[in-house]
Image (cartoon, rainbow, N blue to C red; front, side, top):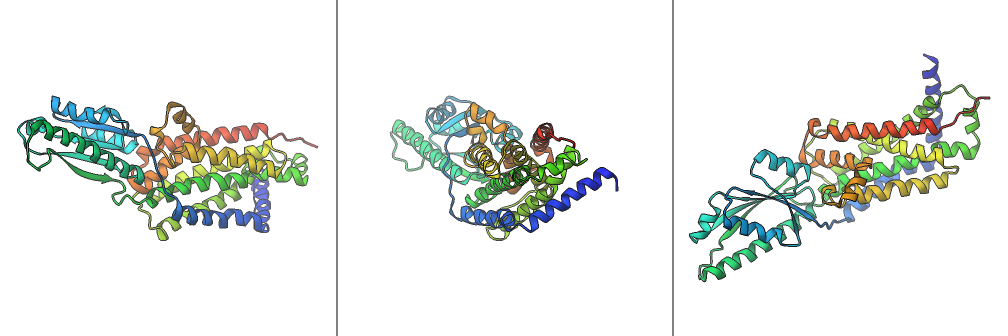
Length: 375
């Protein structure tokens, strides 16, 4: 075995032994993630705002424009476009740029003018269940107000409503919150615990004084980083497999995508989160400071800006900018896409590439800041 690989393997064996004989580390690695996924999975619910809307106006008449105005002048919706191309509409719904599509048929105006009822297609993205329920209620309410106005203008006694809705929900037809919450918890848990474990790596060596063994050894910085990474990457991937199994077997979460693609994302994401902890561990002098710093740096941004509660597309410009610098944002897109939408690598490769770039930057900083003294 080449000498660099031999030294790296020795560090891997050392870290694995430290991990196996420390019950606190093992508890952090397995028990607490299981408690979190069970408690939050059963008890957490969502309430979201800001509803991006797109119209497929095939009529382009004063009647259709009047109907659209009823939505654009409300406080519940933001019109992001008027588009009739089916491929573009589907792409907007898949990407989250729009959460609801309202399809107005070509004879929309003629049927209303002649007093005949007309059906309007409403397609809702169900990947955020609470938001989908709100969308359904708001669309129905605005549609009812439009019908009341038309009936008053017609001064008729016909009980048939002029505009009727054909509702369909994509990606999460049952609108069950667990289909969104549990995959989101996978992202949050893999953000927190691998990062905390990584935050203890160098700080623990500093507190015990064993860091000087590395200073006096011929081991390179890259070998130290790799040797410390691999055992905890294995732990993070075991956590991922456990959480995935719980999501399918205990919660029966809808999954229509590729397990292989999800697993690749989990590997890259875990490398990033352990790297965040390792970087903080290099900067901090004590394990307690490293753990507290890691908690603040990882949990708050991931919870608020990753799309766990509110879609990134619905945030303001500052929020969207912050979200792009958080690895949880990119992994959240991959996770919920794999669970609910079944999209392939051609759709998610930018997110995977972003995780690769993030890992390269983090480990580059780790290598630059990890000072080795010889002798």
